[in-house]
Image (tube, rainbow, N blue to C red; front, top):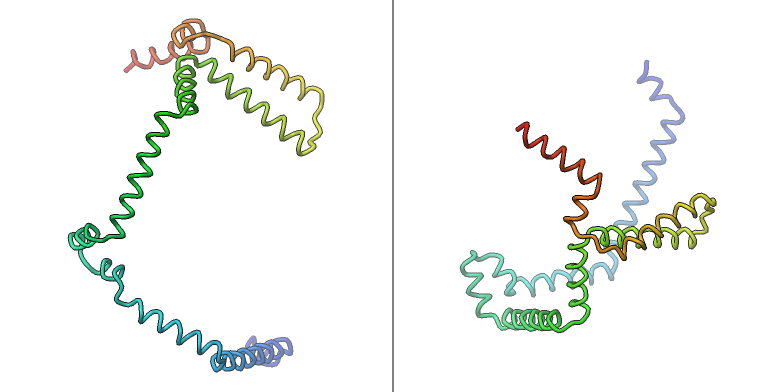
Length: 192
């Protein structure tokens, strides 16, 4: 029954004829494309390029084993030139790192930030709040007064933390949060 309906369906027959017409047009275009002078010239050019580069050094290196590759690379002038360029770049970078004022300041900031976790948290807080505020202004996001007040309070807390000189030992002994963490850590160790 279904086969009879499909065989006699007008929609199915139109669909078949459309696909046959499309395939016929596609075959004709492909034949015209294949016989095109530009396609043939490009195809011959590409096969000549492949034939020209068939026996280059790179293909020989990929076909040989690892020991032979290392011998070839050790004797290669191009590889020596690349190694020398890399060593010169590495020495220049190390020299820059040893004489750079920026790198020296970053090392000092890192050392100070490690010694003062409150300053580290304050730097992060100030940067995040300022970035969020700038993006909110740039995007023209409507903000209510409460949002601005909260941002102002967090920013003032972050700025106050920048000038705090509390070390890790003092912070661990005075912070209620860190005391709770250390207390629960000790309980876990004692239970084990």
